[in-house]
Image 1 (cartoon, one colour):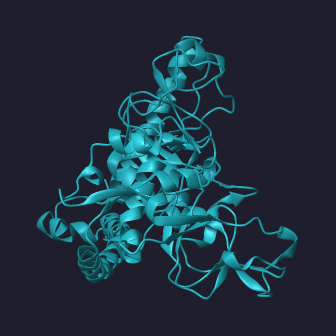
Image 2 (cartoon, one colour):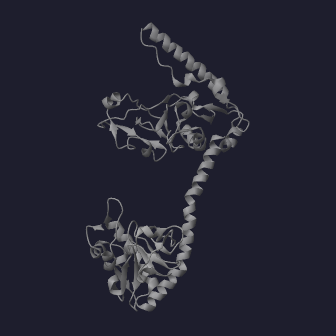
Image 3 (cartoon, rainbow, N blue to C red):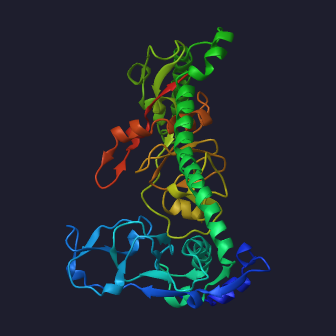
Length: 418
């Protein structure tokens, strides 16, 4: 273990309830009341998973009170663990566990703590020890896996109430802990419940169910079909005018916007399950899009955020979203395009269903795809709708080593009305 201070110093420096004991209580080091037995280095050549020989408690087995490995060789009898023995995993999280299983062997990097004092109750030790292990873990530094030594365990200064009081404390905890575990089990289910509820609300929103009453109160609202046809005609007229202007001024012919590569007849459809004023349309028909370049910048010295998938943690992207930032010259060097405000960025590699609205200009990498703000669809609506398409995007993704969506598949169909 790599500690900058000793366990005693940790307790002295830690201003928390571990230091608070009743004036009539004492403090004792674990080495004064217990024997700490380090696990034995059993030969791995005798390990098996066919249940031949004795079960072997390895570091991964401490928390679960179950074993996957058996040992078929000879072993010293003092390393046999019985049900009720207190074990500590000496790598990782320093878990403390009362062994509740058949006799098993104590492997290295797991230790057993056995009380040898008549003034200390085993179950009180089991309840009192974990907070100290947690504190030690927080002060332990490691490059890969944290390691604990038996010397550090022996140093831990535990409170020592009178034996009868220890028994009363244990009885209270025995009654309370199952209820706490039951509450924890219910709370562990809450994130999944909230996720499903959130998804059902989003689905209701993009299928028109969330606004049924509003439509009844506003029968004068026109249809999406009529609105989109008008917009397509206007866009085509505007682009033709741009071509004419470029020709008159002897300028290069303007690049055709992505949305003009789509058509109303081919890329929209009606659906009887949607409100009559709604249609299903390819996003590509509604918005222009930006596909990021393949080259990664070699330096980051500017002020415009360079956004990758891990930078998307909410529904919005802004100047604070990325740590790496590009200058205008760095953007030009890799032929990148700046994603303007109110664009919508979505993930197109691996973990689909992630999207966010751009509040400040950004540059994105190849994991992302951007839809430019459109006069016909609200950016936030598009962002929320893309979050409902995770399963659909997974079904149409191309996969080699990791699933991805190409430009065509990024321009998926959505349910829409203006």
